[in-house]
Every structure is written in C-alpha cells, then in structure tokens.
Length: 71
Image 1 (tube, rainbow, N blue to C red):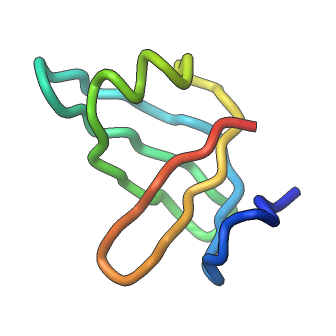
Image 2: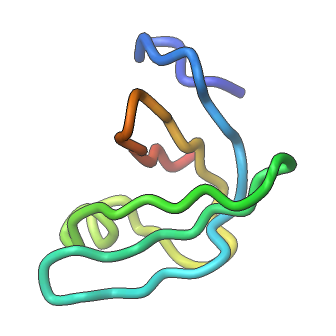
C-alpha cells in the first residue's frame, strides 16, 4: 500500500523497529525490506499517530526529510 494523496516518490513500507522518545523530538527506526530508515519527528506526532514497536508504517522520503504515516 502507498499513500496516494502525498506526492512523494520514495515511499518505504515497513514496521517500527524502535522508538527513542525525547521531551520534544523522538527517533523512529523503521525496518524496511531495503534496510532501516530513521526519522526524527516530534514526540507529539509519535503519540498522535499511536506509534509503537511493530506498527505498520510508510516512511516518506523527500530530500533530507523523512516523514512517517501509520497504516
């Protein structure tokens, strides 16, 4: 499954491998068939998306930015 409404060419489906939570930002490691993609997003976004280890996600890569969308 890909996120059709978002115009990003590089979409990597995977599962959350690890979350390192900070007060403001958190590191989310996503295991994909091509390797681990690491994203730094706000801790509020981690909570709002309900991300946890094993969550199915899509890592959306654009330039030097990696976004996360929960499936």
